[in-house]
Amino acid sequence: MGLSENIASVREKIASAAERAGRKAEDITLVAVSKTVGAEVVEAAYREGLRCFGENRVQEFVKKSEVLPKDIEWNLIGQLQTNKVKYIINDGVALLHSLDRFSLAQELQKECVKKDAYLDALIEVNIAKEESKSGLYLEQVDAFLDQIAGFDRIRLRGFMTVAPYTDDRAYLRKIFAQAKALYDAKKKDFPGFRYLSMGMSNDYEDAILEGSNMVRVGTAIFGSRIYK
Ligand SMILES: *Cc1c(COP(=O)(O)O)cnc(C)c1O
Image (cartoon, rainbow, N blue to C red; front, side):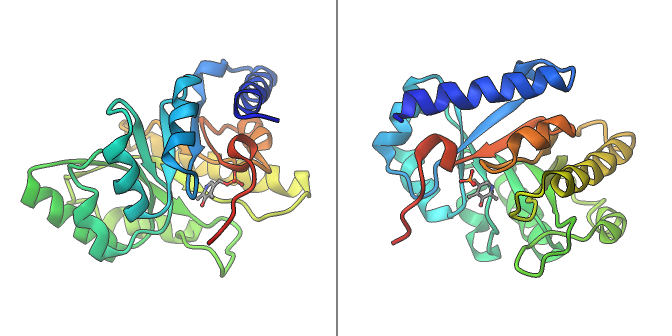
């Protein structure tokens, strides 16, 4: 299938899952994960109407954002090294999905103060406690929120999670439901919360059924990635 058909199919599935969940398709933000995909292909997806793209490497984001349309909303979804923070503040990152540790929050706050900027960010949570993945465990979230409470330059917008890779739909739904419960509980104290980022090519429909309003889809749009 071509890019255009892939995008149409993903949009259809998002709409159908949203409907089944009693919500509207336009309430769900599609972040097209364009890591490893060339700028000309990202531009083709842009011409299909996509505006939110997700990258996991800072260098790659910088390269693409320089040559691609300025109204693209770039989402940084991968683990961020503190020494890369200087490249993302005031440089066109609309949303960081992977705030996962105190040292990173400290560096983000510091760099924002220096540049008189703000950053929208999601806290990454590791619901299933997979060792291969980053993100806070559920029981660490409260302490983390307390620790960064004074960091006024980081605008917390919600949570992001990556579910385990499995075909066990019931298990996936359970993981997503836990993230949704966390999001709902904290939204009461954080009126700026608006995104629960969960769902990838393998599981975005399940994620939407459990309350995701932001899905990060790469393979189902661009095909499988070739890592160099
Ligand atoms: C690569 C990646 C995605 C997209 O994964 P696909 O399975 O290709 O849809 C989503 N979220 C994160 C954090 C990723 O690293």
